[in-house]
Length: 285
Image (tube, rainbow, N blue to C red; front, top):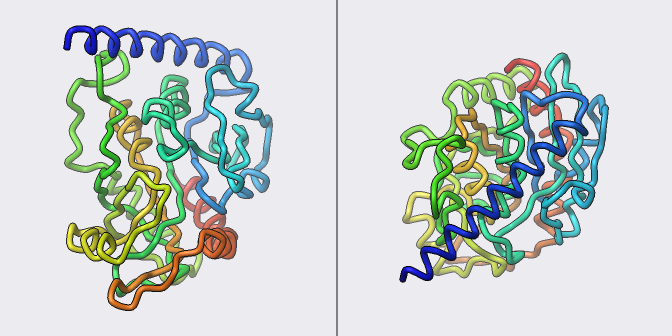
């Protein structure tokens, strides 16, 4: 047991050192410290190409950043402006199912929080669980369930990064949720709802029995990302907004095959509307 604890502490020490090295590198490399971080999910990576870009860095050029292995995730950190807001776009994320730990998955969020970012907007493609949802809807996250079986805050706490036991009574910022709903109304974007997101490990997709159980747990949509990033951002004191593009809705009693290519296609088809919504939200934060 003591050996396990010692190993955990050593790993945390290495993780902290890598974070600090990356912060130092980016502080020198970036033209400014971003106020807002937007992380782009599956099928949503082109948004970073539409902003007023100042700098684009491949993840491979950034010390200790993991490598994205998912084809639809470009793997770039883009710095630019939305209106007068200084924004960092993470074109692609890392996933637990790729073999990364949740500390590695959340590495960019931790680094950008230490660079001074105060707001995090998470986007993802998710499977609908709520039978009232329609494919192509945008769900604003009001809460989540962490079914990964791992928490990125596990191990010794770095007190300078955040509290040992962060409060999660309000994981997603109410003001940002209202702003997202109001922005959708101004942009005349239909089928924008709010709900509970559940994160599962993957990469296998849900069985009918699992779909039924996740519904009974109170989840409205399911995916394989975003929750670890939310946990680290909340620990760091950031305000968080989550947006899921609902790619499909499955009835566990009349189950249809879930095809990844269809999920990506639906997300890509919604990308223009999501981009419009993200811009409206960001300029009004």
